Image (cartoon, rainbow, N blue to C red; front, side, top):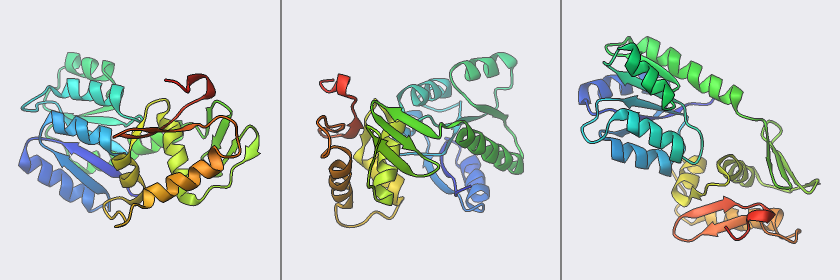
Length: 231
């Protein structure tokens, strides 16, 4: 399993620091938010393997944060709730709004690590190996793609961009999320994404009558099927 990229939404600095120390010791990458609105914004702009979510946030109930992330994020992100609310009704409500797991405070950080691994592994296993968008077919395991049964000549980064767009389709993916997904916290100084998008268009759209890769002004890109070109 690749090193996980985790978003922690937690307003208690002591808990956030303890969680970060244990998870970063696993080689996992952490991003942080102390409030719900910023947490939602990060989840929509970047691609995470997992969200750790406190329910008692100062500006927004964590249940609402969970609901928004599940409804609005470009890809499905597993959400593990961290909370002192241990009533069964609270858990039922959390799961009903999309939470994937629930861990009551105080918790053993070793159990948190085990649950993170299990959630990430389960999410990977349940992710479809083959994605179909119109006449485009993507095989993530073999890292190949065909359109109208014709193989596409893609670079490694071009394939990652295409797979990300296909997973999010029909929703768009922002430029910032794409850049972070490909290069993490160390993006190139030049606008390398623009060059990779151009190459992807040459392979995906140029040989065919109808383009699929659409630019969303001031946001990013999305895949459109032929019957949704004007949407």
